[in-house]
Amino acid sequence: MKIAGIDIGGTMIKYGLVSLDGEISDGGEIPTEAEKGIENLFQKISDIIEMYPKKELLGIAVSGTGQIDGKIGKVIGGNDIIPGWIGTDLVKRLEDKFSLPAVLENDVNCAALGEKWLGAGKGKKDFICVTIGTGIGGGIIINDDILRGDTCVAGEFGHIQIIKNGLECMCGKKGCYERYASATALVRIVKEKTGFKLNGKEIFTRERAGEPIFKEIVEEWIDYFTDGLSTITYIFNPSLIIIGGGITKQGDYLLNRVNKNLASKIGVNYKKNLSVKFAELGNNAGMLGAVYLLLKRIGKL
Ligand SMILES: [Zn+2]
Image (cartoon, rainbow, N blue to C red; front, top):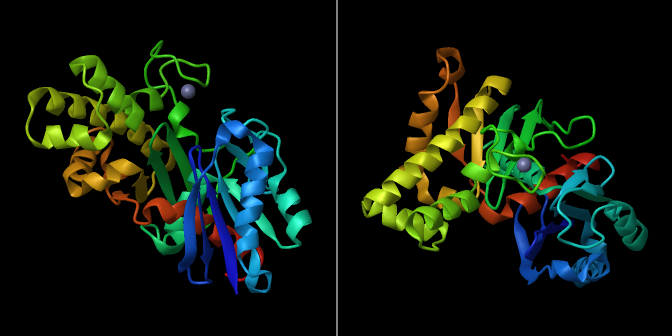
């Protein structure tokens, strides 16, 4: 028996048939076409599920963008990039249509659960996940479970204020962590200081080549990044922080500098057992985490 795993992102939907030990088969990717709205999206999700033989399916596991009440599988907030997405009772709609158990959980929470099941957090009861991309997301694993918070929005680290009266954020506040330390922020700082419009990979290539201005910018960005990580460390006193996102492709070259910089900002008892690692599951983390959640919920794990 298998699970239909679906990861809904702002630009692409990733899907696959996932076995009980996390092997993915019959997978693929299609454009989300977010602007076409919820009904178009629901049709795409349905088409994916219908591709798989129903008698083989144990359930449907969905990782989704935005603020999600993962207990009931309903979208409760976030950016309105998919018209009609906020307010959608996706789990109820899927269960009604397919008569299979379903889950929906926020993508960063799913990534944390995926890493816990099969990745960098394997065997750990407690750890923190920080995902760096367009923004900065967070997932908090405590006692083998996601810490959702009272209204299921715990761990939105990207909106911790790190600069008083800083840059405006789309959340309505100023000086949010993600405005300075996300991948988007790095791209913006490079544009402002050099005039070049480069992606993260290109920026690190030039930095590795030793161009002084890129050295300076990346140092500054790492400093912002560890400002947030130190706050997170002081709140949770974790033994493990897992960092996810495209920047992890930079490997130890970047990780060692993040570790060194963070260590200079936290007290001795905080760094004693702290390990900062990069995520291991890449783009599959969200889908696998949603499947893990479903398997736990139906008593298969
Ligand atoms: Zn914000």
